[in-house]
Length: 404
Ligand code: GCO
Ligand code: MG
Image (cartoon, rainbow, N blue to C red):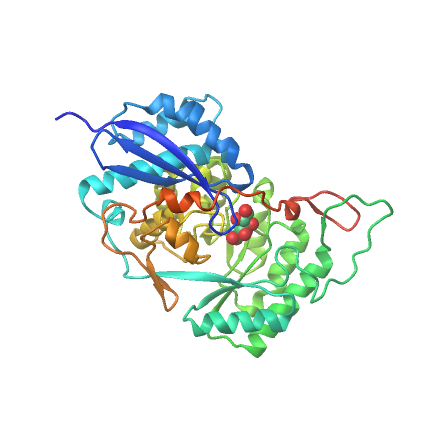
């Protein structure tokens, strides 16, 4: 039988919620058979589009669509230097689209190719935030009313706003522009915030917090110990990938569950931390590591070491990417929780087929493939935008530039 081949690979950038998203569409030699994937690295999206259109598209046209593993290995090896978020996302967009095609040809939802359902619904967590403790608590109560039982709590996003309206941060003369935050104020505000939420709202739900690599190793250890009484579901990104060895000390000195990985872009970054069971949840951004092909292997690797999955699901991911990982969630015995940033009305118009979400769970339908489509006309109504990058230029009180 004549193989079905890749006819063309197209990329689209659309911003239905004001965040640049990158979609990959693979057209095949079989009329009407197309696949979609997510290649969203929103802070460098043009670089990803170039990597796909200038390198992967000419290289893959004419290839058999069924060779997902060989195509993945070829995409990854053919640049000699490999890994990293740009090539990872370019590879992922193609990889997810090929898995979408494979499941469509099989006439079944993708999770069936991954071994079928391990559960009926996918437990989700949402972000509660606000400029004051009261605002955050109101947000938590709203999510509890909607049925969510896992809620990440922040006051003033990453680095915090130090316990309500910005308290002054003392900077030196002529300090450069930047997104300043004070680690000590931030630490104290987190302990106060989470303590108040437990006192005022209660203990009948799971609570998380994302340190977002904003503290020094010793301070993050102190925070993890101070938060033990709050019985967190997990404390996330306590350290940057560059300091993963220090998780050894966190593990040895605190019982606060640890989640890590949204910044991982290389297998060497996650191997040791998982093998040593220094974390409890893997938080990888699946398109950063190259898509479903490597993510499945990572999920299996984690299962051996008792590490559960909590794939990165922020608002800078397409619904295609968000749902692709839900197929992994529903079919992984070591599923932990899925981060969820909601699907806006505009997004649902651009990406028809988003799953039902009710009572804190997502429910995948039985449509063949990933199950989420892409309406090019609707997408064109939301062209790429100039995004606000200011939060990325984070600085300590003395003006030192630090990771955001
Ligand atoms: C999270 C993340 C995100 C990232 C964002 C970067 O846990 O959801 O930390 O909020 O900061 O995806 O673009
Ligand atoms: Mg995070």
